[in-house]
Image (cartoon, rainbow, N blue to C red):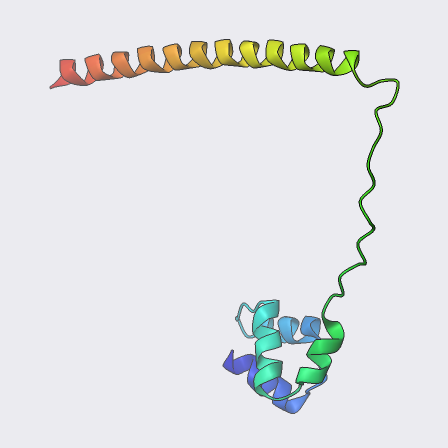
Length: 116
């Protein structure tokens, strides 16, 4: 931080890339937050300039109600049954992996007990 402060005292308008390159030549690692903090400490960033750069929230559009289209209804039942089928497949797969891990754990415990 001291390096950045000294650099910015000499050239207050220096870009972050220039400060970072000079710091790397001196063997320092700096981050953008350090650069911004140093500029604030030196008074190079005023409260007014901070206000200008704050992001403005976009005007939110009023919510629109969606009406059921031709693809709603029977399709949602198919989606739900597909979801449930995939859920069951994943549950079975999880159970297989769990059983495999438990058998590996048992083998490792047996091997450790045999060595003791």
